[in-house]
Image (tube, rainbow, N blue to C red; front, side, top):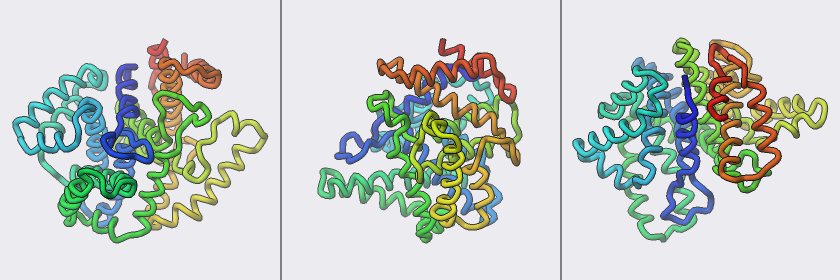
Length: 374
């Protein structure tokens, strides 16, 4: 059973600042970076799929992303250059990962020994198959995207040239990947990745200025994806359902890049407004977003984005919706715990607690999870 400490541990990534030794025109957090990375991994995975690569495994990509997120949360104070330096020494890197596992095991043990062993093996096994290379390439691309912002702000800054050269050498390592070749050659795919990244700049509950931690729409999407996947494992869902639930969570708020994060009270304030917003989102997605993707990808991506969280094609709609609302509940819990006084947050927290306090969804006892928060 998923417990409160694990949920709160994942949210620590929302407070982890990236590039905090450089001039930053916008806040760059680890949670947003990891979410952007997994969207890029999806694009690269789809490109590899088109080549007929039989070694591609979406579960390994998804879990690799989760494992690396947990690893980064534990290594919060370790700057990337030092981290990569340690990786060059196999024995030191093994010792570091042993420490990471020991630190995170008490939190993830609720997910079962099989999951814990897969996490431990992922940390200890340096083998770079296609699934790991996709994650690594996506990590690089998201980092380079962030650096481009940093560089424009302070092009002559200390170490900027050194960082630029280092990233260029890393880019050269992925030239043999068919998926990276396609991404770099396709202005439309690059535009899709870029427009997804804009959700970093849309802050949830934006009318509550001082909410702590401040989560973006992009970061929220990853949280929902991870919650949905962990719920899927808990109910022993088949592989297809696990994958679809994860990516539904990861893309479920993508239309908000066109409409912003409109809170539910506003949607319900006028009869028919919610439906009007949905219609507008679909029209704009067709006009501005879907055209950027290969036509053969559209049925799947539309399933992930044009949703009312209904059960279709191997996806647990109500489960993903429960993950979405649990993520919102944890956001209200953390903000209030951190001293933010807000009637809106209090109402939202109470409403969600009341909705789920005695409810089971897809065999997940949500009531027990909510009760954990008191």
